[in-house]
Image 1 (tube, rainbow, N blue to C red):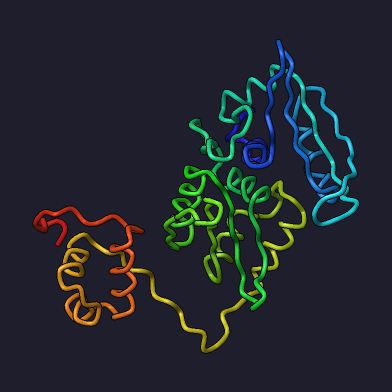
Image 2 (tube, rainbow, N blue to C red):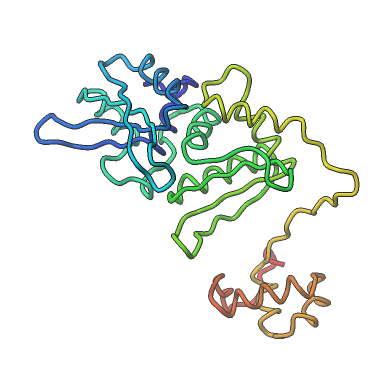
Length: 273
């Protein structure tokens, strides 16, 4: 399974996000992927790419959203195949927090497209703005998407788990979403057809006249945090730090509530200044 091959890199990303590798007694065990029946073609492609016997079966069951939900399940039992997948980074059992980008050479855009096809969304918001998002429990995968996207689009994100379920929700909108979607969903790539179509549709978006372009965020330095804490007054700190009073108020609240770490108590260094 050469992860420098775009097809296998995509397949591996998809399996990390949506596959389940289980052990059994002795040499028993399996890899399974269950998807909505509308996405059966991607499982057929995985079956064609895999030189081991496997099966695709249908299943109908009641869910919270439908009395008759139709799904398809790809099942692979070969121990050799499962060993290969495990060796390159697909853990056995519950894995949502443990998956990481491969530690061997791999095709980066294809791997990330596999992750996004399994656990992401792409399209237009209710307000008609293009977006591309990923929901993941893996710190390593979330951080890698942010690192890679900054290189491709210049858009910077700092990931933080949400309080409700401790999951990362990483969202890109407008020009960043358009550029990232075009980069990941290039012509002829292996992908879920419905998400490929949604990604392609983003290319038609143009920023409406009069929509303000938000300037890139300016990171807070430890020296600024110390000044803000010493003054304790967002309005006064805004003048000294050349920032808005609102920005200072939010940062001060985050420092005081522990949402961001307090700066080290040491004099500013020349590099910091």
